[in-house]
Image 1 (cartoon, rainbow, N blue to C red):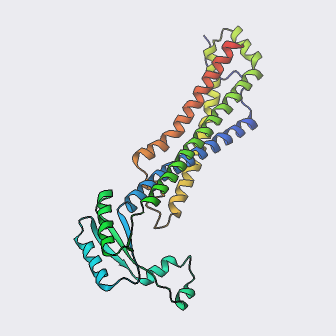
Image 2 (image 1 turned 30 degrees about the vertical axis):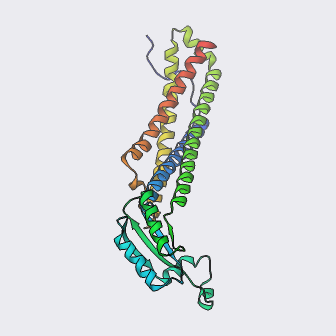
Image 3 (image 1 turned 120 degrees about the horizontal axis):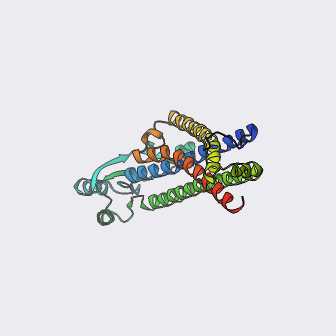
Length: 290
């Protein structure tokens, strides 16, 4: 019975280093793209939680003090409004400053509207319409904006980007598998004589497959570990560079347990499919051509 050791001369230092580098870059890219898709999911959830229950009321500058007082009473008495806040003129000027020069605002007599921010108790469309009707009864020019249009558009864009990220990740994975299959096929053709000699000596196809699996596993494991390490460094840099405004959305620490398990298991899944591809490719070629 043949004892297992590396008989087929599969190793090539230069090509092996190139292969390790390619696998590492592919794994790192897949993990980064995958994490981007997960971050987009977190961002969508953040938008939903922070914007869905917020509304803005725009009041014309020429509204009477009596109407303004009635407006505040409406907010207080509404079962739909949790709390409301008046945005002062300085904050309004600060909000529109990127579009209108501050000196222009000071020198020109521009009447700015009065703005209220509302914290809503729910996202009920019926309750929202009731509040709109109440506001229009006070003054037809009062506008209530619940940001639903913006939020809907943002969700669609985030979903599109998330799907695109997953598609790119799958394409990279497929490219890696196909490249490995081509490499294995080439190595088999280069070592046809050695494989035939092993068959004559009594070696089975399973033995030859095992030779390739041991060779590819050593290369693939190095590439997967290096790629995972590089991705880990990028995640760490992202976490360290996050500002106070974005650290609750765009850091690795804010991912759910499912998100983390997805990232942790991805390199293992990639390694498994690389070994499976190697086994199937070698078995098929040996059966059909050798």
